[in-house]
Length: 369
Ligand code: IPM
Ligand code: MG
Image 1: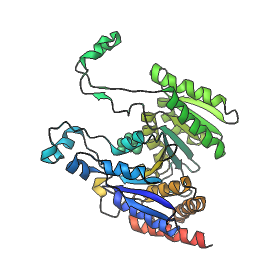
Image 2: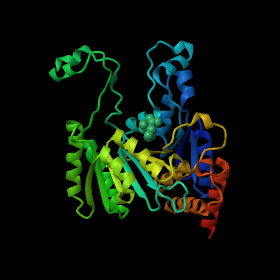
Image 3: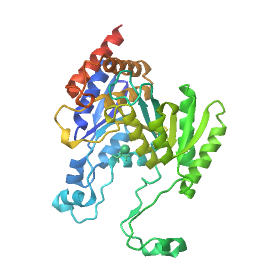
Image 4: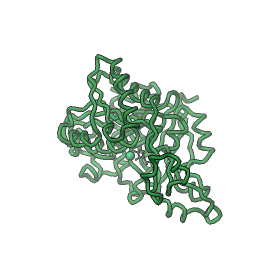
């Protein structure tokens, strides 16, 4: 019996090819798993009106964790037009499957390491090593949105400031969710010997929601006197990250800010080709490259698979396979430093599979040595 049961969700666009690349590396590392394919993505929206079918949720409930590639999502009108005719006009609403998985499975931590691999020609600066902890279940992403203001809203006096024709999105932030993400960031900092945690907010304007987050962050920080605690406004930190990226270590923030900041931090270390994510709850997790499905590159064997390969290393580590995780990390480090195999984003001509082969070969060499 293989040791681990993995729900394997390549999705669409480039999802399939980057997942195949990760699989090649996991196999080279001797990762012992049973991979169970799950349906997810745009084609299931078109055919079934659900990009994350129930059978896939069932699969998630019966596996140790999931590995996810990427999926396409399109704006409302287009999504409706592409539905199979029987499903049109039924008020089906497309919601991003990854956001739904995070919420349904309470994967409250979105862990996004952004490390400058030595010698990566795309590094903004050498030595950058930032880990973003993004709250993953609430905030602006709860999915409570109104294309127009419901009449009943006006029962509350302050609502009269909202024009009736306005579209509104609700931002909901709780103390409990804020606390657990900040705790996760501090625990990680302590465990991995990091020196500083920065809590990012906009409490001077978003007083209610960011206020709750910031209060919790301060309370938790007081319990970790060994770690420097710092706070920053979301706008200011975007500037400071570009000016002094080496000043930042662990960053913790709410959902939307974390979504934005993690792309910024990814670019500091080479862009989406290097950005991996773990969506982690108390007993389940979904690992994925941070990038999307890049439809224009789908099937071209062109995109950089390193983000997905690094997500595989995160998965191995979460499953307790430390040696395998370290071997994959070391192999990626070596291939980048070596500089011979580079995908198009790195200024080279190597294909997705050539990059994967190079990492796999290096993994084999490390594990034999
Ligand atoms: C991410 C992505 C997703 C998000 C999209 C695909 C819904 O941007 O994982 O950062 O907004 O969380
Ligand atoms: Mg994003």
